[in-house]
Length: 246
Figure 1 (cartoon, rainbow, N blue to C red):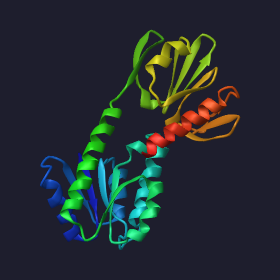
Figure 2 (cartoon, rainbow, N blue to C red; figure 1 turned 30 degrees about the vertical axis):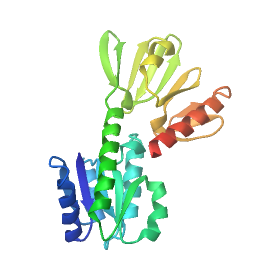
Figure 3 (cartoon, rainbow, N blue to C red; figure 1 turned 135 degrees about the vertical axis):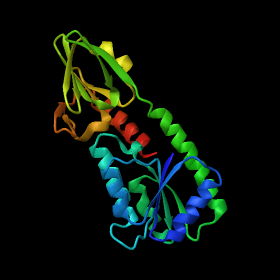
């Protein structure tokens, strides 16, 4: 695992690392004194599996704002909330706990930190990271386009459009066209994809918003929503969002 500890008190950071090391010798541990350091780490391409985050950081942004910004960054990139770090708030302000529901907080540890409580939460997050790693295993779609065999990571697919005898696979940065029908690819897609129209399959990770008539993707593309598929889509998207939060 890659673990981050963000607290403006060095003694707290050192204590958390010491408790981690009693059960885990191998994880990479990064110390951050401010929220800006955490956000800067991500801007430089870093990533964390777990983040111990003090809510009441002395310097702006506070821990709650850091968590919100991380969630927003991942969703804008189409990576989904499930790929944000598991956030464990370490706080002396238990009255702020209700604010955490919107930022996918995994757990709370109240200061002063008790070792027994810490180890219980750490065991929980170890299991959660392991389970998430299984879900994140890359899945690929292999297609033939203009005589060239291409391997496409499913997480790069924004939506697929059927046009006559061809499928137009819209990726984050390009479009790949192949001959075929939806039946040829549906069985190779995962649960993040849903048929919303006879001519469109969308990756729910990339949905920005929707109405009863269309779906706007983060790319800005507007996808028609069939009235016959509307209820199926609304239920499926609700289940998807719930799985992303949990």
